[in-house]
Image (cartoon, rainbow, N blue to C red; front, side, top):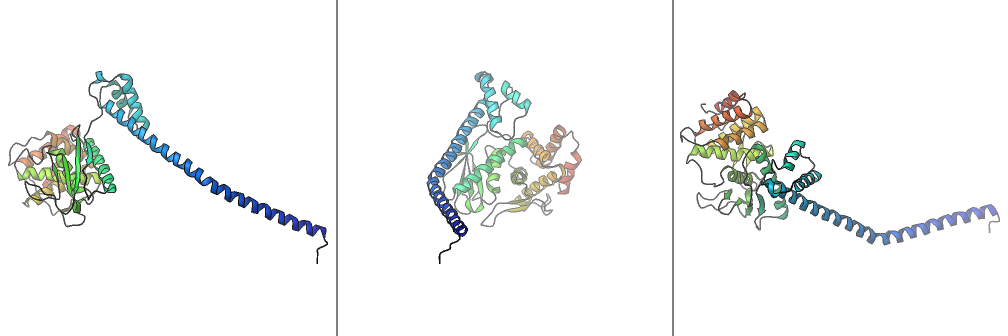
Length: 346
């Protein structure tokens, strides 16, 4: 029976009108959403592409600025270009150059260190992800060595190659986990021993310590002990890690640098090398990372092995000399006590 109440009819019509209105709004919204998808994708793609282009341009600018600021002859670069190069580096760097360094760079009184770069050698065992991680780690390790005071060659590429399997063939003394070949300037590491990169960092360290590695300045197990000890210690110090491990999938060398089992009284190549690495870590705990790493770099760069029977004492004395120069000589007793604690009579 029809409702004869005018007010009731009006309320019903109002409700139907509101519902119809919301239905139309919903329909329009859906249509607009569907229509907007291509627009959003296009705008989003344009933004991403623009960011990629900006990053590429920024990278080119930074590379050009670095090229300008590594030129040692100030007469070859106009002052205006040096100003631009310094300002460009500061613009794209999260950590700005200090005012005095920026002024010296602009005046040409100092230059940026021009270091060798890293280049991957194609290998079935080298994935894009591993390549990105290795390149980044090697660059950071190189910067760490520079900051510590080691001399890094100023040009050319250092290649790195992942060799499938558990060993890298080396003619002079048999298969190894990793090695540096100075004739090809390539660091090689066995796939099974990539691990946390200790192996490849160790091989690169030998290149820094001995550019003509494996040719050594002194044919002595004691000399090998010191160089191998540094090559084991430095990657650990860099990674803030007290255990040196050269394996991931297979059994390899593993040395706990905090262990008291390694000392100079036990003879044999591994014990000798591990004793030095552990002694360097002991020194790090006593003097701190920064000072220890700088002392080791200073001692190594100034050391000229003389008496084959006194090489270990010579190197400790070089550390004492380095402390005299860098630390005012206040750590002499601490340095000697560390090595005495490992069984070396100094």
